[in-house]
Length: 179
Image (cartoon, rainbow, N blue to C red; front, side, top):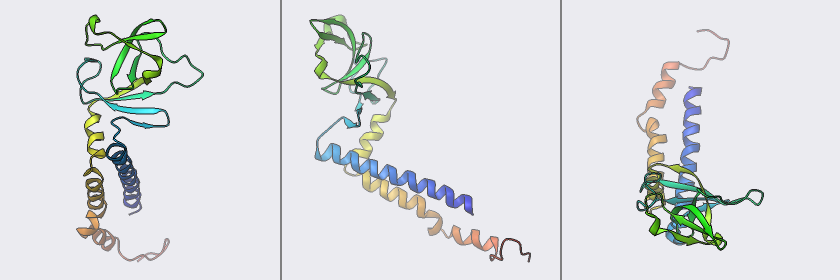
């Protein structure tokens, strides 16, 4: 019975975190109109289009980190997230600005990218996660997460499974007593 309570406690903690994340994402997207989600120097941006294919595909989630003051910010070949929310690769420099191009684009699609227009360096890609973040940040995301959590955590009680377990165990007689 103790293991079941621990599992339910862990599920409840995960559910609370997921609900809080869904509420926060919904406010970010619906109230502040932000497509990218930023917190503590980490930015999550959904990949749109095929400019960075095959490295990034539409529906992936790019995770970018803002540079800290101790390390050189960006180098040639780094994949970065620009202010417009698009991931691109740094392929050169000219007059103090970067030359950027998507992995799936031809050299004639290169653009100049000033340092100030870079959000951060892409450090991870979560395949297919953009749809999950979109679900959580939709207006109906938090209510669905709330209902699913209540059903998941309350289902054993609704079905009467909690009573069956306690009836099979018998009455509590103490740690050392025998029937």
